Length: 274
Image 1: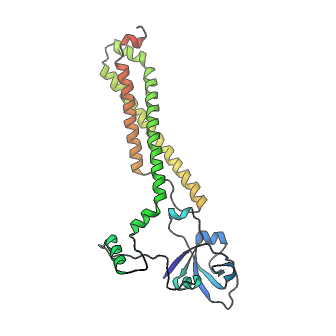
Image 2: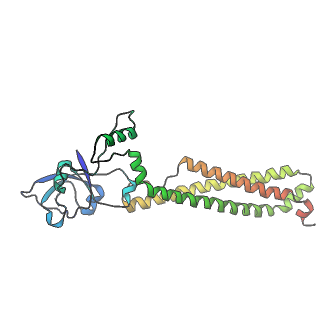
């Protein structure tokens, strides 16, 4: 059984094993790189600078699963056999936390409640509750991003409406000529609405390309900066569908408002004679 020591190794350097007891350990890949260690190296271990009496041999270097909660801490990590870790810390028969795997069909909430009723000295929590508590920071950031997105959508809708009004104003003479030759208002309205839909689709495609490029650049930079495989930017089909849908709805709404304003104007006014 292995335990994870999430603490900075106070002193770790290559040495030759002497008479002291030697233990096996595994180092996280980033820790091994920062300390300049590799498989087979011997290190001195201890909980204080004056207690480096135990020797450890690096038996493996592992790559942990990406964890957003740990990415900013950048702590040095090592894994020991549980008895060796307990002896190193001077805390036998004592752990900070451990996990239990439940058989299929057992409710985590009911299992945690039963454990809390039948034992003392610890507190059992469902993993979903722990994940929720540890992700409060990410939830705050998510709400902040959602607020920014709503402000951006409202601002872009106003900007899009102004652009469509200016675009339609440039077609005043064309609309006047079509009205003089007998083209119905409904036909002009649908033509302008179709033009707005085409512009919305083109803008959506351009936005998807920009988003994919920005996401790729973001992932490449931060994965290299934090030396991790964690994905920082994800463009999902749901996000793409939401973006395209919003673009079409806002584009058609702006086009409809601008086109309706144009077709309600008398042809002589459009021509500039009244």
